[in-house]
Image (cartoon, rainbow, N blue to C red; front, side, top):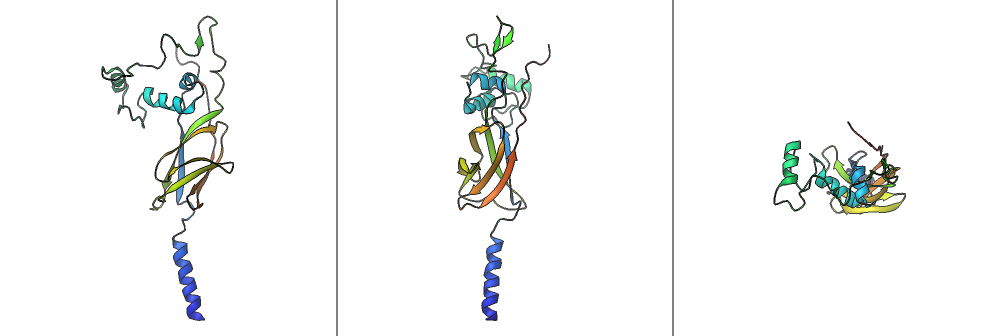
Length: 193
């Protein structure tokens, strides 16, 4: 009886070592479509707005299009002759943006906060833990809103801009992290003179 009890305790101890501890993982998040002028151009498509930001934003850290760190490097990357999309801005003479010169005001749609955001989330291991292998799932209101490899960044295209609780689970439904996302959205209509 004593040997059986010690065996059960030993097996239970081994199993407990394989369960992720509290705070073994955290979720980092950022808003992809964080420049309202590109939301306007993308006509509410959060993924397209995020892509415009990644292409046109100077010194964007995750920019895959160009590795620039200064404004002059950004200008050079936007004006290279081999760059097929070498404009400095996505606005053109045909599409001048949200400003209506005749009415001397902005388009009313432009000054409204977006109803949804493009959310980028990434699971980060803490305390020398390794990230789970396999597929992970992001849940919002008990519904799956995103999925992908646990080791890679995940995109959620239409997350409510009002925010909410997001949970992140592994393939075997283990809760890896749960966070409250509360974006603080602001619209800056004018800078300078």
